[in-house]
Length: 236
Image 1: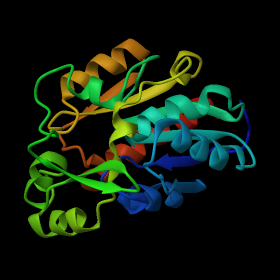
Image 2: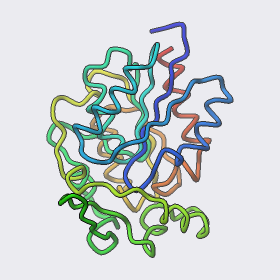
Image 3: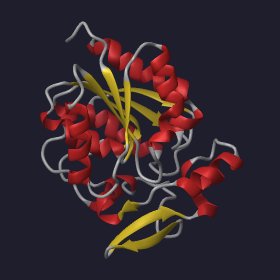
Image 4: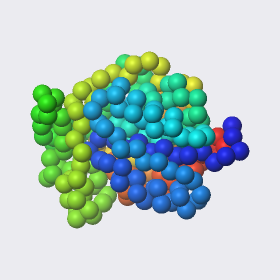
């Protein structure tokens, strides 16, 4: 516990960038919180988690670590040995146990529309990476946002390496030792709500449910910020 407000470190997922947190950042800053939105490399679980850990470790004081989508894998790995992380918040995110991969969790339950039919494969330096096809982006990722907004998001999405989504978590997930909160997006077509519920229950996370797409941080920033604030206040 600390008398100082924790710094909120936000980790975006695949097919997005740190600007996806803009609405949440503004709300948290208005409440007096320092915020860092990490630019997730999206290259691989261990290397991405190491980068997230380096950002959180550099913060002077306690941290609430927040992950969206694939970012949930990274915070589960990055916080394994970080002494200044007080809480984890999962926003429509993966909460893997040891050995779980993002893709394996997404397909454990029916309903995921993210797959071979909706993604395009690029090859960079011999490494396959994925992007969501522009025509499928809104349905898969952001069905509760206006079409003009999702067209821009589709054009600016950042691809993720295939290995990042298929590599299992190494070590014990940080949610085993840290308190966690989870937001389940009930209209999520990327990570089915049933999968989110399963992971949150397994982790013992304090859970809220929002009628939103996978892009809940964009469509419902108030609900996301409220949950982060709840975690921050509980650990302050």
